[in-house]
Length: 338
Image 1 (tube, rainbow, N blue to C red):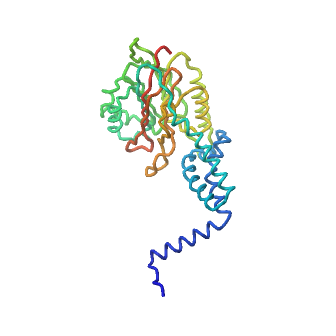
Image 2: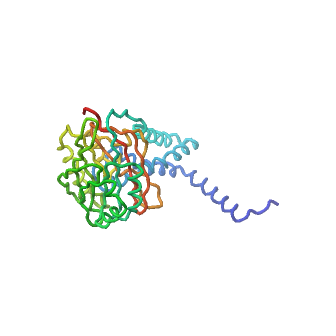
Image 3: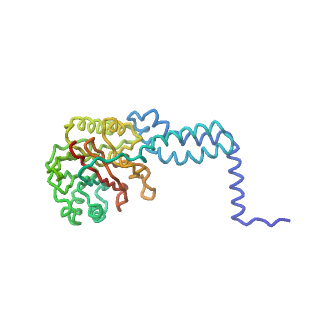
């Protein structure tokens, strides 16, 4: 008579039998593939600036991670149609991601280090932010969700000693933003959507003398669960204002865009000629946000964009205590003669 399995072995046996029964149901695996394929399908058709499609397409990176093993499992079980659909979507996502891993050659010119961080209602650790500015030798810093209390904390941590020139529009909760720079800044008109979006012209020293670089801190409003009217309005305002900037002026736009490369609103900016620093530098996929502290950052909502008068050598992203966003740093190049 064989020995009776102990509790752990019996539980594993029951789980294996349940798994086999589930997989024998021909509708289960196609249903799981369909769910995992949903965000990519919305990415293909476009989210239309509608609330639920915008939120669904946010999860493209996570859905692809689920789609890969499901596709492999479908092939192992000889569910060829299901496997073909999964393989096609995995391949399509590969095409979408491929440009992120192919670097462009930066032009000769002057290095310029930019950084952006969302402080999450001003609660991010100010000392960690300032330490990052010092270690990465940041020249231009764009901060979103900047509160008056956060301005005080950052100053006490030594930020104003490192970056003494600034254009600040702090406000309560998520509405404030600020720009700090190593060199003199001439303030520009504030762009005001739901959140405040300050900017200015930074006089960057080069071998040929100071050059003006327009810098804008962007923070379009997020979508809500039920409608995306403010999201759509803020992104339209940002795009229209950027299109109205002088084309011969080097320009940087950095901040929390509340949109990833999978969202239609952000792809419109890319279609206007703006370059995303990680893509230009070939840094690969960069995550800067997740909805919970214990979940790794799986979507890039924070960006550093620039026009054709700049390039990028490299980027880095890292976590800061007290905020659900990661910081993004880009080593840019201000091109000579452009």
